[in-house]
Structure formats: structure tokens, C-alpha cells
Image 1 (tube, rainbow, N blue to C red):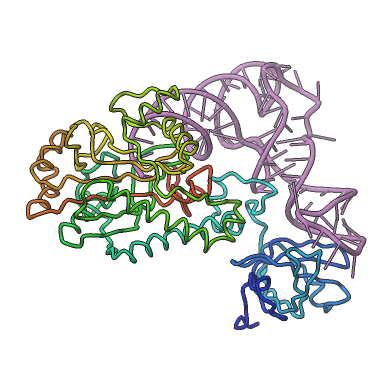
Image 2 (cartoon, rainbow, N blue to C red):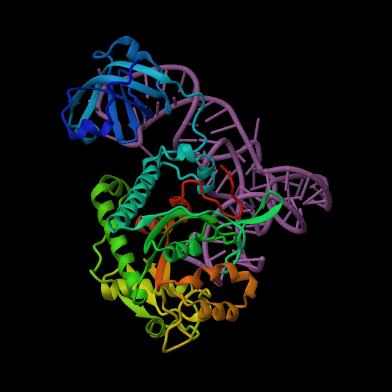
Length: 437
RNA sequence: GGGGCAGUAGUUUAGCUCGGUCGAUGAUCGUGGACUGUCACUCCAUGGACCCGGGUUCAAAUCCCGGCUGCCUCGCCA
């Protein structure tokens, strides 16, 4: 047994290797008596091993192959019109590297759809289903593309602490943990640290990391732990500068995924629509008017609910051919205290949401950098002075105007691949009832 | 946190309204067998299940109560 000459299965179809050594697990055996077919799968793809009784050795032919077995196969690549994708392997040797000891506890083909909670219990096997594994091939490419974009634009990647001593911020609940006899919390966003980095002088920073939300939401778009793509930039004129970077980053990522994960997208049956060069930017007021025309009434300073997001998503797809829309100038009432207010209307802010296919994907905007105003706004939101004192302290030695945004990578992948539930886009989801595996 | 629905073999699904005909349906899967071009291989035989606890009743998968688990949905958010 020797893996040194092993090649990826996908290479069989893209080049003309003659003879190959491949290894993988058995996806299916079709036994026709004097002729057997083994579908062998590795990360790169699937190939058929053909076993005609008269053309292979009796040792190879008589092995009892089963779904899940790990095989090492050496053989000749032969063309055959009735083989999947036109090629198959006629083996000269087959090693059973590891024999399966039990049948799969879940269905990993598409004959039967096992419920997502059972699939998650056995996620490592679920991922043998290519329509599942390709989601994470795409996610990997998405994360890399964002990093690459930011790196090319001279952003500094930083890594902030996820264990924090105080639990201020936006209002989402935090997980409390024990910290050597004291209380500490899991970070619900890197917001304060992003701003700290700008005040330090790094000007453009980003972080892709975990955030924790202790909310008992039972929906198809919420997780208690997810990965946030956060960036923050200094010396901006207003929130439009943030939108511009965000749109560029997402367009870069879409393009990259479209080119480099074409096979995965094809297997998942996903086509990435070309987006307009400039995504629509609609003010809160404009959105309310649009929604009213569609028969959806909202209060003047009320946040968009799930239904409103959906209606708006359909509207911009129809009118602008865009999957994305910026909902700009959010009401102060529904934004955290560090959001900068509009100069001409104190009820509105210089902040936005980005909606993707009718679902909130990103929140961003310009932040208040003037310490005294920030302090006043914290008070307005009901914070006690000492609760926000250490945060506001950041701003007292000179803070540049700045802004940024946070995007959930799982939501991005969910919407990109049209997945019905965000858990499909999270390797090991954490929700109010699940902490395993 | 609110509302709704559900839990039947390893997986999936019928049966539940109207209790007995259930010794529980079909698929997939397992086991044994047949088959030389399958591609959800096919065919024959066979194996395996009523979430847990309590109650009503002559009789409970089916009705009632409690628990646990899951799904959908609203709020909130990314």
C-alpha cells in the first residue's frame, strides 16, 4: 500500500493520465453478477471503478465492497460512453485500506432526505454528501476572497479578544462565563476593538472571527455563534464611503467564487447573477413609501421586519435587477448609541443595512467619534456613565471620523447558495438547544 | 421570549379525525440469493419501529395529562 502516486479523482477527467492511483471512500456498489461497478469518491469528485469478471483478477472481483469502505485503487483510465462523464477505471490492484464497521446512521445520498438535526448529529458523515461538502468549499473561498480583497486594499487584519469584561454594546444578550471567580462575557461583536484600532492609527482594519449572541431565536437565519466579517475605516466623509468598500468587497468575492468554485456551484445548481455596477441605495423614508405602495405599513421610525425585507428584496430585484439593496439612514431609535446621527435630522442616523435577496446581511455606518456627543448619546440610550466610561475614554485623545460594517458569513453563503436554513451554511451550528457535536 | 405543529425500523414515510380490522404501510437500508453496462441498477426471499412517564378503557400507535426532543413562525438581529 503506497499513497505517494495518488492523484485526485477530478484529474482523471481534466487530463489524460493513462494509469492512475486513486484513493477514497465507496459511495455506492452496483453488482450485476459478472460485472460490478464501484462509485469511488474523494474530495475532488467521483469516478466509477468497473469490475468485469473476465478482465480483473479473481482477488479483486471477489472482495465484498461496501458503502463507506476506504479503497486504494490502481488502474487504467478507459473511455466508455456508458460510463459517467465518459471515463472509468479498470483496476489492476485494489487495497481495502479501511473496511467500514457499520452502516451509515443517516442517508448520505439524495434518495432520502434525512432531517437536518439528525444530519448535524453526524455532520462528519453528512459532509460526504457532495451537495453538502460543496457548501463549505464555497464558504472557504468566500472567506479567502474577503481576506484577499482587504489585504490588497492595505487593510490590517487583526484579532481581537472574544472574552470581554463588560457587556455593553448593541443590546443583544451575551453569554456569561466564569473567569477565575469573576464574571466575563463572550464578545457579541468586535465593534469596540475595531474602533480602538482606528484610534490607534491603523486607518483600515478588518477581522473575520466568531461572535456570540445569547438570544433564544428559533429561526432559519439566526445562530448563537457565527462568523462575522468586520471592517472599519478612518477618515471617511460619511457612510457612503463604507458602502462603497462593502460593495467592492462583496463584488470581488462573488466574482472570485464564480470563477474558482465553478464546479461546486454547478454541483449545487447555483448560478451567480451579475449585479448592477451600483447597487441601489434607498433612504429609510423612500423604503417606507415603497412598502406602503406594496401594501405594507410601518411606523415612521420603525425597523424593517422580516416581511418588509422580503418585499423590498423583490422590489429591487424587479426594478434594479439587483440582489442587493442598501437601506440607508436608519432611525436613531433602532440603532446603538455609537451610531452617528444625521446632521439635519436627529431622528435618523448615518447608518445602513445591506439586504441580500430580501434578508439583512450587513449592518454598517458612520460612528460617532466626538467623545462628548458619544457620551450624550449613550445617556440617551439609557446607559449609566460608568458602564460606557472605558469605551468613551478611547475617544478623548483624538479620534478620526470613521465607520465600518459587520457581515455574517453564514448568511452570505446561505443567500448566495439559496439555502433554506442558515444551519446548512454553518459547519457545527450552535442554536438555543444545540451545543453538540 | 410568544404562537402553531410534530415525534412510528439505521434513515424516511403511511396509519392517528372515527380506539379493536395493526401480528403496523411503502421506500431506503441490513442479511441471503439471481443477474456482464449499471448510473436512485433491477428482481426474489428475509430482518428491523409506535419518544419517555402517568392516566382513561374490556382494549391505546390512535384519546387525556406531564416531560423531553425537533420543525415552522413572530419578535430581535448578522
